[in-house]
Image 1 (cartoon, rainbow, N blue to C red):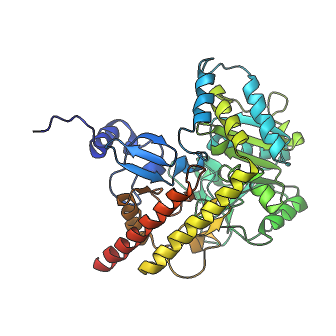
Image 2: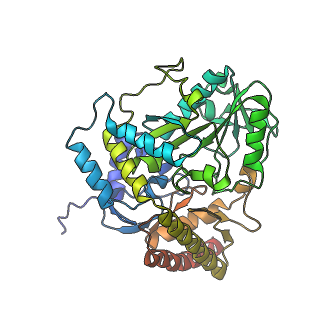
Image 3: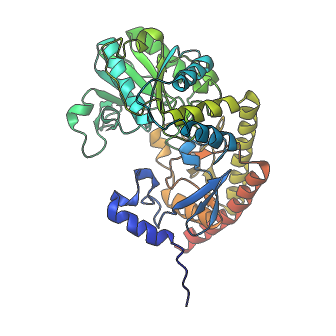
Length: 430
């Protein structure tokens, strides 16, 4: 009779559900979209995570893009450890937050000032308030399939028309919260009027399977915002410092008025930021009339980790990451083709997506929603059995990082061959 006290994923998840709604502290971590029981992570290193049962997985989630150098990178852990010895939070200004702000300003030409906060959602929420306060207008324009965090005004779903005033995208968001939110199709430049305060856009849509901006889309948004005096806001929480040092703005040579950041700039710790032109940013309190505050904003551990991450992300690193991402996409595509599984793995710089189905890669949310979610669910679990962890949702990105060396990429390719064959067999059988 075994006396082992090693916990299981199932037992710990059942226990978590008693005290945490759904057993998770972020809805997207649940396996609701794919079925089954989530693994609970015990530790991570480099490209790998281990669950509480000791199973090792190659991790393509990478904290949804926050981890770019690899888990527990020695330079990051050293920076965090050193910062922690000096205290973990002060409620007062620090040199570290200034240095991180300077590092961001130095890398992004449209950003002249930065306000740090604690999450991407807080950053987009602040950007909404700032855009309205600066312009004196109320209306916000967003795009179908873009995700900007859990901000009420941006949690809107489109109605029955091609371009409609938003409907609440979730229970708990009153109609009044989105009555000034216009939802329009991605990759189509809307006609604006003088009621619009700002257009919010993911310059690369990384929450619907990675959809690239079509030629002229971002430039068209810039021109249309300029025409009516609206602000162009780039949500670069994912693309910022992942596509390159200047993010999507440098890649596509388009300057935003405001930019929101998160993930990479915290080196794996909680952080968010809004950056933009000086005239707009100085509208924020305490020098302007748009209020923003946060007890843990500019946290010294997060700023230390973020500065270290940005210092290590040299141009050569981005070149290597782009090459590895293309290689991964090709291996996974070829494995699926060989198995007879209709799937595409579109690439934009260092981001790769997944789309299950025939035809061209999606260019908007309506096309992205045609992905075969049943095929994805089956493939997801097949990959997990092969030791590769994907995000448990059909519209998430694959995040390749510095720790995904060539042998790791090849291992993912081999796992995809087996998983694709298993997926086809299961789909045919059922």
